[in-house]
Length: 396
Ligand SMILES: Cc1ncc(COP(=O)(O)O)c(C=O)c1O
Image (cartoon, rainbow, N blue to C red):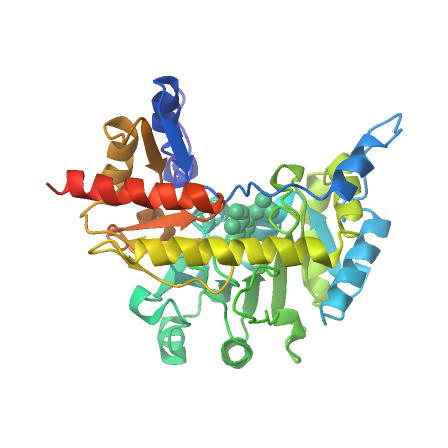
């Protein structure tokens, strides 16, 4: 048989999706599964976005411009301006989800064997994008006991080598829910300027901040015009994960010109989804107020219930809708599979994402899981009850 590429063999499985066959089997066998593993919100997509697609009378679903339609990019620029980020349509490349923007960013800044420093745990698919791009991730460990705050600058500086091209952060963070402060962004800005690196920030959860805290974008930081690349997406902001629209934003003209070449190679982002995303920009503020207060309540419910289980440590997220939870088990890969295959509580079980895949350091995070609080409060309370019962049985 012809052989599979080394790159293909090295591509990591998604820790979020790899247990899906076990969940499907459990569901087929009649179990109810609470999905805490995936960031698929149960929040309704804004009606303006759905109506814009319903009311279309296109006769041809044509390609759009590779960089995204001009009208849409102008409106995205206006959205950023409202958020204190002063950029123009020319600084934006519309992509097929934030995922493609991340791939384009890696393609623009790194060659085979180049290194990108990322605080871990990090969004697991960074591993996949890095492998596909031939990039080596150099992790800098952020710790649950510090609630995943930015590691000290010296830790970054120790890791910078002649191959280092960038620092990549996710703000607010998936899977930690960590929200970087303005001071932390400034510290990162000083390192990237000193060492002439790119600073890539994944801001797809920008709106989701709690306890009255506000998000500080890398594009609000002055003096980073050449260094900053921001990744964005409509997936979570408007609960439009299936639209597959995101964007790459940078004031660095060479980055935009290079990203455009990647964009041209895949022709264009999806036409209908751009129509929906453009309309979604009309979503009233009260939609976000309601959604954010719903997530904040869910977070409080989840964390307070988790903290009552002996041996469980949960970091308190300040943004996004995930948290990393340490469990009193040796290997959460096995535990998560056991939950689906062997355990049930009155015909119900939970699906969690083992956290090992959110680290690139081998052997780290094996006793942790990521939980997404994308279910309503009653389901979250029931899920924690199931977890508590399962831990007692597993450790008996
Ligand atoms: C941190 C982060 N970045 C990027 C993405 C990619 O999102 P999409 O491709 O749906 O825009 C996700 C999706 O969950 C994410 O959590």
